[in-house]
Length: 365
Figure 1: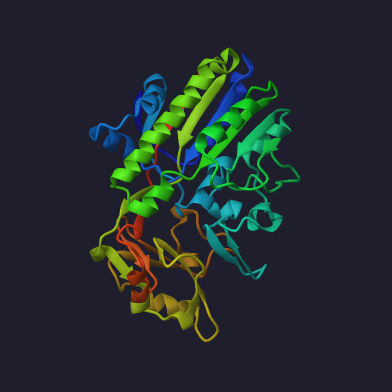
Figure 2 (figure 1 turned 90 degrees about the vertical axis):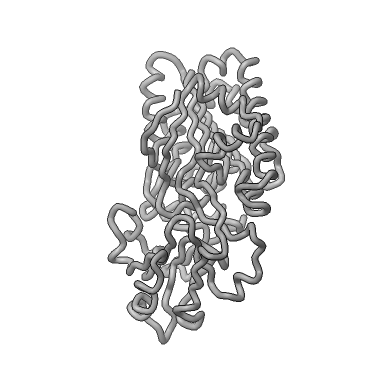
């Protein structure tokens, strides 16, 4: 079944539904996030005669949601925390993949494995669903979900990997998580996998290689379904949600905004990559938020500029000390690059625009 609706933070509500179902039979839930899986990859793959039969099996016997809008900062860290806490980025505190905390006078980086186990970044008031599940007497199994190697409210997942292993194939992640879910007391499993995002950054979202990855992911999902089919207890109890954190689209040379056409590096601090849809600007000594704002606002029709206090309420991105005094982001299909020197460093595939719409498939037993 296909349905057209707008979904935002939905996994915790599915857990609530699961709890209601538990009055009749012990249900289990497996959530799989495939990073950077655009909402239209499956349809585009089918047009190219790419095998997507396993994905089709899920939505033909379950649900395919056609329009899913994630959080404002559509990045891996923020969105994955929103998915499992039911909170906006300003509330759970992971406001970007890389961000500065003025109270700690330190910068968080999602790619730094040391940061992933530090309480000061994650345990700031939110509660992920694996902790909620455990508080209700069940056990949780989490494979590389961002934040899962950090204790929240003193609790780690019942079963988890203590250190992220980028090289571990999806089938191995599936095997281990299914072994955990086979245990009667484990009712929740989560798996994170970095594809197709990684391939998209290498060869672009329209490449032959990206659809080869989609086909390989289809095979891996087929393997998962076959494992479930051979385990009667899971076949009758395991519900599956397959989703992502963001989509991806290419950007041509005419859709790049150069930040340093309007301000220079001595005026601000902004941790992160050289090309981004979203920029958080912290004024350096000798500059000010108002000065940065005035130099940027209205300078490019595809560049949005806000002082923190004036960010639209609907974006839920102002009430946190980790959100910078000036926020800049581009319109869909555009990206912002730090300088003209930065542009020269990139291949034609590495400058990408983030698409907020992602895949969402649900299989309910």
